[in-house]
Length: 186
Image (cartoon, rainbow, N blue to C red; front, top):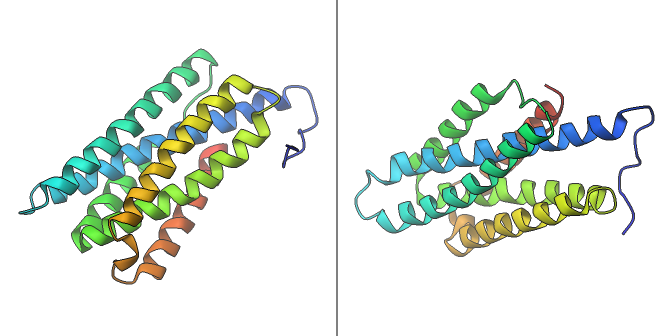
């Protein structure tokens, strides 16, 4: 498969690009953990919502495994996390809680929107890293598969039935794409 992004010129460009990849992926997994925590904070208190709260807790567990791995990679490769981490934590929790307050279907729409963006993001990184760092590309492939499973579960649970589904998911996707660009650099 051809690399969709040409290598950047200059000494250290490869190392700088890897730092961007690790930084943004760690930030994304951090946000995912907090989205699920926000959703659970609302849905655990709602009568009859134990099943979805348990499902969200399971997904949060997967994201925590990913986050732990990226935390280790940042440490091993001496890459600083994004300076936006405190804001991303708060915004992600608010997004999770806010969508859960709209309703169960909106919480699923949030999951679908986020995981759709992340799957595409990981796919690009996997293609970019497949020759240069096949071990990391393989890990990202596994993480992408987990994200796809979360997306598919959200769709199966009725994400498309959320109120204002097209608008809700468009806004969430745009926010995810903006957070990706910001986290790579800051």
